[in-house]
Length: 115
Length: 111
Image (tube, rainbow over the protein chains, first blue to last red):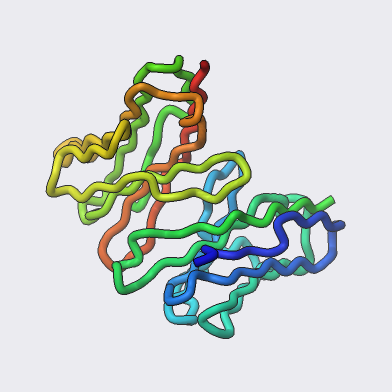
């Protein structure tokens, strides 16, 4: 298995632009998580899905952030409009509910820089 | 009550020394305590995990010590190597819930 695949790996954009981050979870995993990592705040859970359904989006910073999971093999995290304070590394992780979702497999992350 | 507090924030150890990272929690319903290791430019990866029915789990040079009464658990890295230099996260969860991560510890092992 290729693991959790995220794209793009790096994104540099200007304030006000729309940013879309993509994630392909491990085949057969039915839980998907979006995290944001910064030096100041560490790893923050933004949102997670079970069986493609959003379960908890309380970590989404504000209405500028949205996430979708149209099917079991694809998810997006969108920021519109982007702001410099959104600069961070965004991780997608997947897990199997069958094992209690105990073990998260993380992707390599998408490093976002908003100028 | 869902928080997991981790210390120290950073740690510098000489090669061959013992690295110790500590975590404390409040929620007594937590029943799974993993540690994740993250190298620069990579996502965190599961290193070792423990359940509260045992007080210690060892995998190679890595050991988790668990103190249920004190609501604390720690990661010990024996014979620390420069290749162990990474950020370490403790975490905890209850059955059916999502993982709660600690703040992370940046470990540097000097040659």
